[in-house]
Image 1 (cartoon, rainbow, N blue to C red):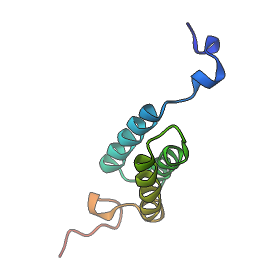
Image 2 (image 1 turned 180 degrees about the vertical axis):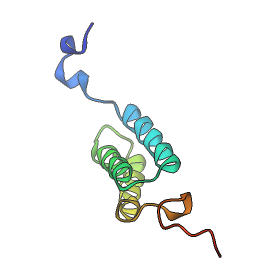
Image 3 (image 1 turned 135 degrees about the vertical axis):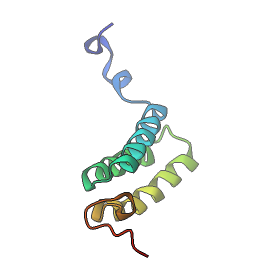
Image 4 (image 1 turned 120 degrees about the horizontal axis):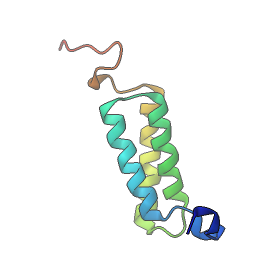
Length: 89
């Protein structure tokens, strides 16, 4: 069965799939921080937070994390060697 044969409502990502994709994106951000990858994490967190199929606690945590990730979108993590990072203490 191709994705063209799947009814539209079944073609949507499940909450578990979105959560797994978000965790993957977070690990990619840790490897190579950038504002673009942070924005992707935020979008996925917001999708999970707004998905009524998700557990209420998962929605609440993802909403809070989306707000915290705004910091990363505005300023990539300097601790991981982003341009301008300083190793001096």
